[in-house]
Image 1 (cartoon, rainbow, N blue to C red):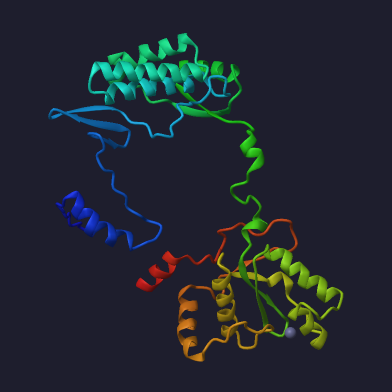
Image 2 (image 1 turned 90 degrees about the vertical axis):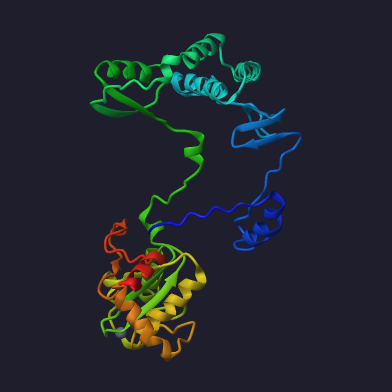
Length: 342
Ligand SMILES: [Zn+2]
């Protein structure tokens, strides 16, 4: 799609009076701010522009709360990473500072900060030599590496392996071993049971009627609770158990499946009611009454989403639930929109 470019020339006060009230009223979490020139100085990204006698000077801009603390030299990182950090800081100063005086000042700050972070003088000198070497700015076409290997980082040993590999034109990358962070935080659920949380699920009976339920917990845990109730002949707390006690039917546990995944409780509850309304005689009663007027649309939607006969089965016999993505019915907004456009 061709995009039309709009050039909108406005003064700062014009922006404050027209653009900001309009822009900031759209989405609460997206708010525009305006940086105003102060004492002839205006920061833009990491550049501080200073105006004097029709000339603009540029220097490195740091936020007022910047502490000047960098990765400590004793930190468990390969040496080339720490050298690279020092080189980067010096190169940035050289590129941004518009005159020699400002550059020298910035260089002094970098040196103080890095010394405070434990960088020895010889490393600073090496960084300075590399950063100021004009040749290093020229992109030399390096021979592409024949292969890349990824090894755990073990100080001194990994560097040696890297040097040997380099001789054979093999690129070496390090991966960190155990860190405090990796021990204390789990960003992603690594357990498949965890991934089968927040779902609407179906448990069929031998009489062809289905139980539809929803849970925020791992679905396997919830189904096992139903199984326990049936086994102990308890009718309370499980519509499945109630049905078995009344009729003596057999529940087809292994045909249980996940119908829908939704984090939001309200939406999940509504989806549960829709799936129940779709059933002729569900074993459970919907928490929301769905007006029959909507059912035509719902049926069409369910068909379009290919839910019928394409459900994710729940493996109750093994520890693991079937791999996510295998016939997974995870309906995202984009899928719905795409399906509608078909
Ligand atoms: Zn039955």
